[in-house]
Image 1: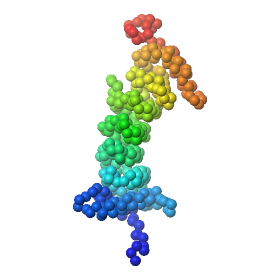
Image 2 (image 1 turned 180 degrees about the vertical axis):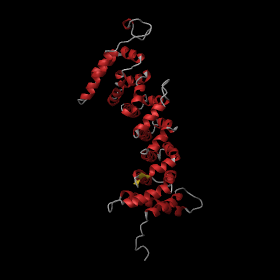
Image 3 (image 1 turned 135 degrees about the vertical axis):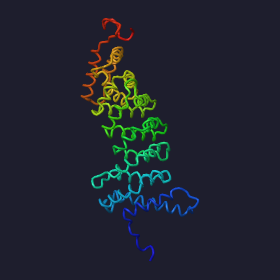
Image 4 (image 1 turned 90 degrees about the horizontal axis):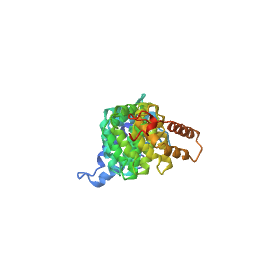
Amino acid sequence: MKGLFKPKPLTPVELVHHIRELLTYTCPNPDIRETKRQDKVRELVRLIHEMKIVLYGDDMSEPHEDACAKLTQEFFKEDILRLLIVHLPHLDPGSRQDITHVLANLQRQRVHGHYVASEYLEQNTDLLDLLVPGYDDPETAISFGAILRDCIRHQVVAKYILESDHMKTFFRYQHDPNFDISSDAAATFKELLTRHKSTVAEYLDNNYDWAICSQFFMEYNVLLESSNYITRRNAIKLLGAMLLDRSNTAVMVRYVSSLENMRILMNLLRDSNKTIQLQAFHVFKLFPANQNKPQEIVNVLVANRSKLLRFLSEFTLEKADEQFEADKAEVMNEIASLVPKCETCESSKQCDGLNC
């Protein structure tokens, strides 16, 4: 009679407990026969897929709210996220993909009005110290990146990473010669700096040293000057999104008061790629528009006035864009009306403001 009947489906709680037990078999162990270990791993893969069906449903059924809630509670109660992160490198690519789908769903599950994942991560921020270095391994970088972005949905996670040394490593990852790693790291970096606007504004404002260019923007300028087109494009687009967001107004005003920042944007206006030129323009226009421009910025704009006006007059888009044309006209008028001056000359007409 054996094999005539299908085994009774595991409850969500049983499913979690079985997965917890089976995860220990992902690593080779001299004390366990290899054939037995492989059988256990195959069973683990099956149960991970079953957990995905509980959360997403399949062709036969829709996910059940009560089952999803029980699975979510037990999953985080039993610390399965930690175990999956630890054992992820030992699983095959298909299983890793199933795991990222499962975790993406669990991050969004609300039980009794609460995000269980958020409460769990607040008590286990050390897991982020395991996730971020996942970019160091090309085999698992994409999986760890996907999990990390879903964790960043929770404000407590974004705050932790922003205030940690991990911010420095994100700049390094975006320079990685492996395109998949650099692109995925850029996507995570963008999520980190745009998801929770008030948290990001507080971070930037608290960490911008106005006596000298802050470490954050020093590192960011390196991205803007990268020899890699994709890195430059991603960086200038994200910079525009940050500075033009109302929550970052204080940071934007300070950013556009830096001559070094403006020089970098002026160079990007000359980029060979039209997309980068356009994104650079949307940031550069903030410098002339600043009503409290430092005199050194005024002087540089005046010194380059003819070149800038000629460039802007010839700078057009393939498709008509009234807002772009209006912004461009405003920038050109502002630059044309600037008057240089320096402390050593009595009249602004006596010099160009640069040579005294």
